[in-house]
Image (cartoon, rainbow, N blue to C red; front, side, top):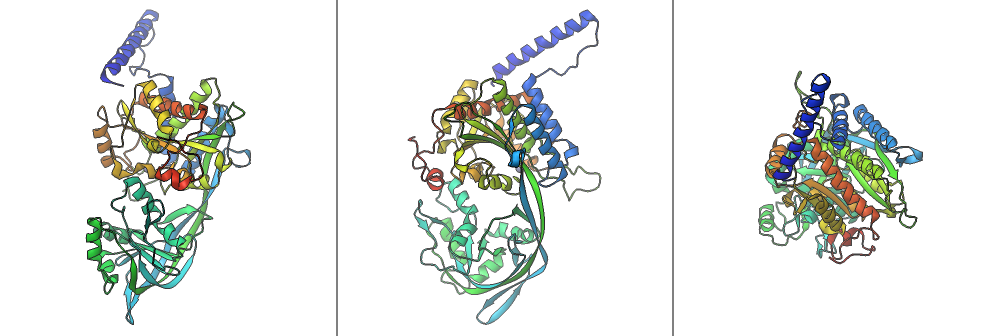
Length: 544
Ligand SMILES: [Zn+2]
């Protein structure tokens, strides 16, 4: 909404207010509250966020009672709207079996080369990640440098060619590989351990830039790791090396690490080789198993030919819980009002719009409030692997994550829409509401691979994720918010949230999902698109 429209809206509000005041005067009642009403959709969004972000829910941490209460609230809203349960056994929920692993005692790690054994100090030389698959690990294996550890037919890159990592520990450069578009590089970065496993490695160690490596070594072993139970991998050792240790393991190697870093900066190709030393690791992990719900509802489609397809609308309900490091008397609740109570409120409001339209969508629509997003998109990943409808019936997805409802947005960024025909649905919806679709203003943040739609993208589902744009002051507000409030206890109800913007954001996402659900054709990846060709090779593609 532009300044002109905002002024018009204000005028209407003042008019409404003054006529109410006049009426009150006439009947001699108490004057009305000074806060102008924002319309029923804004009030609904306000109500959802007010409940979900309240202190009572204690930050909705995955597996916490607060998150369970939040999940019941969402299920209750879904029932009230007349949706059908879409979880397991006719329920509203898919309970995700989680495991949290923590390193137990002090692991023994040493480096063996030329007959020497060097005992390494965990937390100083090396950071070790707890294991979710092996409670006890005892390995000793040679190490192989694998460059960026990329093995990708589409890009024509195979860092593993001429290398044998079977039964060995792969050592790869962390961070996005230079010269590859940021979203793809980020995807490849997150898949490094999987790729190593596919080549038979039993370990993967990332060599990061010296600054982040020093931090990671301290943090890594202390930080618990949580994932759903049932994933298998040949990878037993995940670790990071301190900058000093990284230099050390390249001593006597064909190329020193200093030169490799220089080659990376100069975007020169980097070749792998066997490293001269072996790594010995003996460690134990402590496990805590628990479960946490995904909330799933379905609005059945009306067209007998298309109702078997599902368009998914999703948003994460979990947040960061309680702040352990807070001092007594300090705010210790990560309320997550915008991240992501606001997204879930948008989800419920979009469901409301589908129902209120009085016209069922042609395709079925699935509404999902996720768990485990903040610990690595784990709930969405579980559901993508264990869907409650046939996997190939999920034909498109709209993700709702962290709408910044602090200004009157006039544009949006639609992550993912340039990969598929969803772009058309986004453009049409935007046009209908006078909202521009802008290009990604922060490509280095690679948001396309950082929210709950991504596990579905990896299973071939075209997806989109909208962010309120940088126009009309958005840029400054985003920057400040990301610096100051994001993932802090300040993301609470004391922020000047503009509920009417929540209503607009819901309307926009509803229109996008509606277009996808009603179109003759299901959303299609564009021919030649990296993600479509990689994850949905057999699906028909569209021309740009
Ligand atoms: Zn978050």
